[in-house]
Amino acid sequence: MKKGQNFEKAMKRLEEIGEALESGDIALEESIKLYEEGIQLIDFCQKKLNEVEKKVQKLSRDSEGKFHTDQLDGPVSEEQD
Image (cartoon, rainbow, N blue to C red; front, side, top):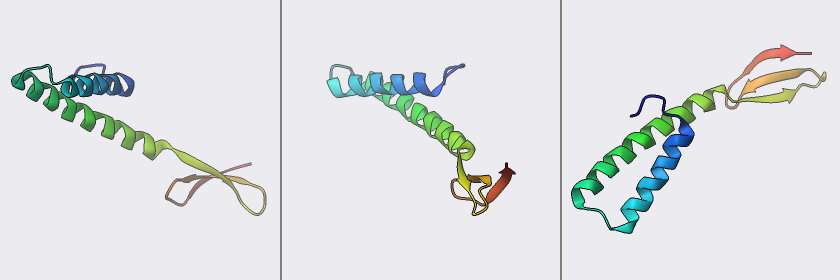
């Protein structure tokens, strides 16, 4: 994995790899290298998505009109007026 990799760069590279593999114009050894790189990029992207998912919160309002932030699948975490 390249240092300084970000989600957008990884997704772009995955698209490039997919196109190259689908073209069928590359040698078997190069295909294997690209496939392995793609697996690493998929793992990187999945980890980034999991990190972001943990940060995403839902804003809701209670019966008294106060706002609360909730984890998407968890309990109320803090109260805001």
